[in-house]
Length: 240
Image (spheres, rainbow, N blue to C red):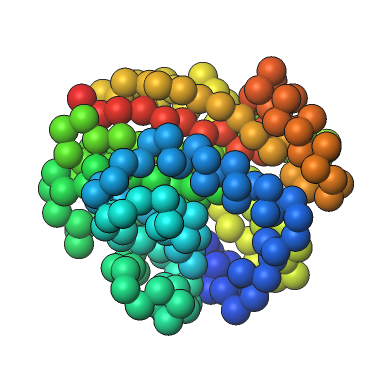
């Protein structure tokens, strides 16, 4: 039920997906994530992007390194097919992130899952087990999830462990199931799976409500002081 619902949702919005995030706020988001990714990724890394969508992760980092090898994974066939036409030089796999059978053991330097994509997995533990399997020794992760105590959820009186999520500006009648996390639960889940936690940060408390650069700066300040109020939480860690 989870995967079927999520597949339908992302298939439905795939035709217009890239146009949902072309405003000033989204540009600021992209720049921020680009800066954070470049702190984790190194030249010649093999990168696995879970919930890659149209491979924005690749677009954000490809000009910053001389040589990286990128593989994207997405559950939506429509997203995958569209991404392949937009990026014919990279590998994109149609699969759930909890079943990475086409990715060899100990072959990946960095696993990323940006813009809350990790929250949409059907099985958290299976996905983490797959991440551990494919990572090389001392491999790194950059995982973004939806925050349980975000301003958005508080205003909507949503306090459960999961939610029916629709990305902003979408007009689809469907939704995507998602998990939500606090900073402590996110740390504990990965720590208990053998990861050395490096950082958990929040960003995007205001979710693009006001398209002003100074509001963006205030937003980052609020997220730094009160990360759980952010829309997104980002975990960086190393697998020993």
